[in-house]
Image (cartoon, rainbow, N blue to C red; front, side, top):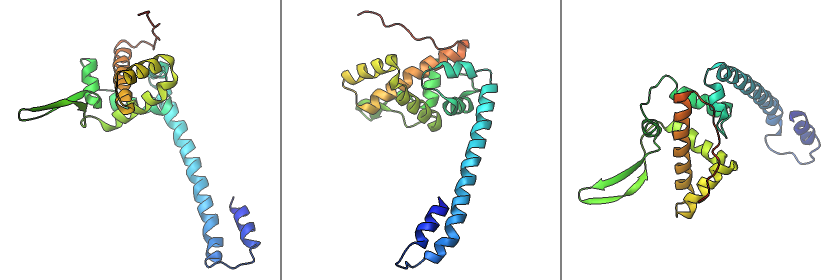
Length: 183
């Protein structure tokens, strides 16, 4: 890429201010970018090896829309912590609704601003990616039909997946897709 840019600069008929500086800076920037890509690949491989070595690897990876990076985030945020119920895990992740009150004024439930922001974002993005899964998509569509906005429906899906994740981690069992029941 740097060589192509230098060739293009060499074919210019109009001299642009800073062209000589570009011949110095561009090769250095291209080399830095290549080293960053190599470093990212190395770190990704090391994180992948650490996740695969963890005993909960198979459990986490069986959940739809959970890859190596999502599993690594979940492991770093949840491993070593004991949650008595799925509600406690959801509260820790900030996925529980909160009723806003001020004096005698009681407003509806809203998304919590508390909790572990990293875990909440991980579960939210995982829920977004899970929309390709038919069961997750059906749940999302049902929440949308109930009048929830996109973000509210995604948070509801993330909460449901959090409950499923809790059961899987508690029992050490792999994800098993439920068959839809007739209404």
